[in-house]
Image (cartoon, rainbow, N blue to C red; front, side):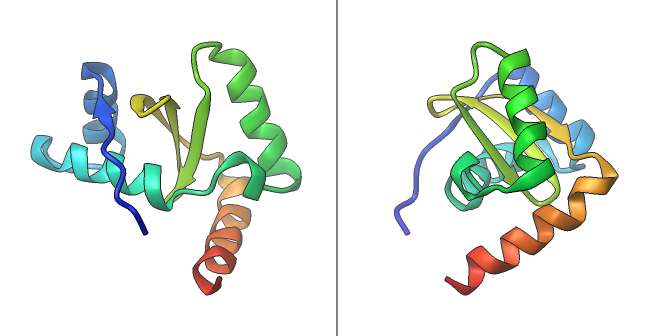
Length: 104
């Protein structure tokens, strides 16, 4: 898989450290992994897809939203804007879809 370089805004860096618990150096790695290995909108189904649609319409600058490791990463192109936790009820669905993607 081709590695894609992402850019992390100051706000996104703070949110990664706060919500994922990694140090400042690791924020870039987490962002790159989410961009390359995360579930895209077209790979989502049902309630999870509707939730991501709601986030998309709320954040009008976002054009690339990924779900990775039970978090939602909101990008504009390759620039990470923020990170949001998935609601508890959608984490099971996201994990199931991630397993399916890994098998492919």
